[in-house]
Length: 332
Image (cartoon, rainbow, N blue to C red; front, side, top):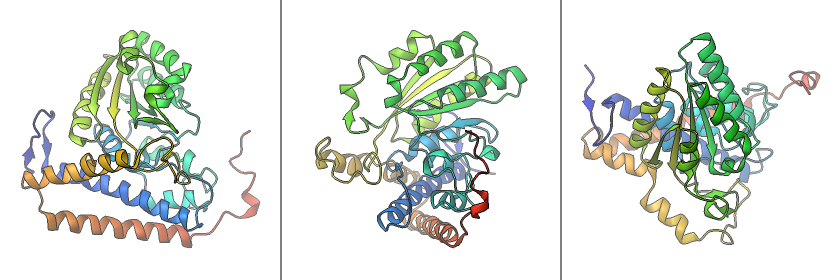
């Protein structure tokens, strides 16, 4: 029988094995993004990528509260969402490198990965662009009585998009099973969110009557607990929810955003990494509970890193699509 270990203030109870699974997923996302950065800076990967490093607890905490057949929609910073929902790293690397084995046959790239087998309806390069898709998926779930819940990930920059308020309005009116997850990583590209966002963020959801919670997005247990409450509520027919996760992206807006001193200080970046890193915090808690020692966590990180290296090598060795396929999958 698995050991159930409670974290203070966290419900539902979680088995020891599941806590370690969450840790492994967070390490996987971190290792994946570090490899993506290496591929870009080595001029091997074409285009750009928006790294999720620092925000791992949000994707893992939310997706752990979902069933495999529940829906998610993602953003331009979406690698973490894909992996947490169950995507395979080798096919993701292949997509980023434009290879045929990728999730979109190499034609979507970093910002358009979709994986219907795990309920991932796709990332979207348009800020706020997936809000309508997630809400439509929730409508279909209710209409067809599938019991599925839809999660819409978006950054705080999407709070300036009117479509978000249109869909929250209709979701509340029709009691749709959708959770809007706002990842406030503090910056709308190169501008602190306080310079663009008036008032209290949760008050916007409150205006439509949505159930709402604010959590420390660097604490995976807190994210998981809040997401579980909102997801279960929505699955039971009680309507939509809004989850605000306070977090931080360690890298720039994209991999090419190297010199950031004009919009945020090095001291600020170092403070978040040194004192609020979600993986380090979670590792400390696991050791404190006796669920794993430092050696075991080190072995886990080494195993995951080796798996990521192998996945990247698979993609590097994979073939590009044949030129005859250039017009396939093109709908516009």
